[in-house]
Length: 465
Image 1: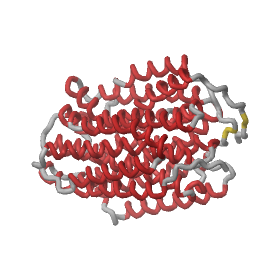
Image 2 (image 1 turned 120 degrees about the horizontal axis):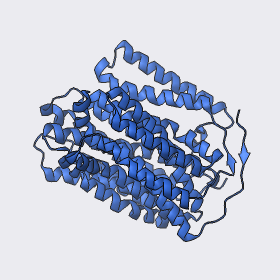
Image 3 (image 1 turned 45 degrees about the vertical axis):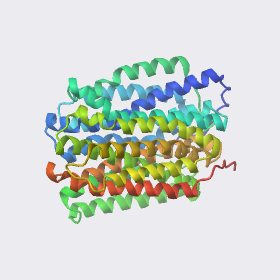
Image 4 (image 1 turned 90 degrees about the horizontal axis):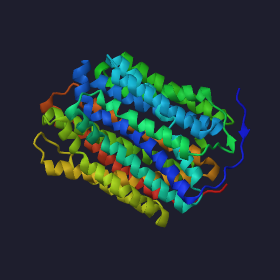
């Protein structure tokens, strides 16, 4: 069994070094976010190339996000113990190798497996990079600004994924969606070796293998039932077994975690309204974003027969809104706290979803673009206050835990958004797809409303006990 280890606090970095570290970590986060959404615009091409239907395509997306969500916290614990830069670089190497396997995949099964391996590598990047940034930025105001930039880059990467994918598909095939990772990984490896200092938690947590297994089982069962439910029938014996497995794994996870001295996920943290609200908000924001991106891809390419490039370009307003508003949101959080940007996020996401609840095959392109812009603006305003609220809602020693849990919540939201949206349109013909997707836009609207509730419980308060 592993033992608890203590390490001395690292020396304070110069301002120039701190912001350089942020830039390097943002590069890795750009990669993680890009691969969460770049595949979306290529799904029709992947389906044709590998002869796979909508549900198979959902697994290609969610194999990445489910594994990423399940392993984020354990990867953070490994980094705290063995060194954040070391784990960060291992994650880059694994992510790169899995990307090559994706690009060479001869079948859908191999591609799903490779995407899961990508998720393993990505899990070593997201919470570890955030812990490196938090460790390098001890001043709360500077940290809030850094998280705003962080959120901007992450938001840009996820929103820019469809645009980048569309551009690649215009001249190449779907395998280029994975080849593009190679130069980014090479640059991140080089820069991290030169500029990122090694650091560890002053008190490294023990690994919780039972909790990790049960969390993975829970997420896989929930997402699996949502994806396969329309095919097998929601009341079929197979579905009932899936419900039972998900419920049993959840109950076992809660029981195990509540009895461990150093659990994978300290469930008592959710008793703090501020922290619990931030986690719920993270899930809601990413459900809304990924529902939007998947429905956009299928609607524009299947119903309206747009090219992948045109469908990707249509999301530019979303990307621009997220990119512009995320750093602005970070500055607002640093000055006035998280409530105002969360209220703005809720208002814009709600408005964007409402624009499309009556979607038809002939809906105005201007209305589509306006809706995507509104959702992108809301997404941009949401990320910084959610992350900052979670981090500052706990003692500084638990910043890494807070970052890992909110990152898990984001990826869980991404997986749920894909599963729910895909379930709405699986097996639906191009002519009926617009009408079938309407509940998805109601879901996006509901996520925006939920952000108002998150804003209500938010407090710009730092807990010290």
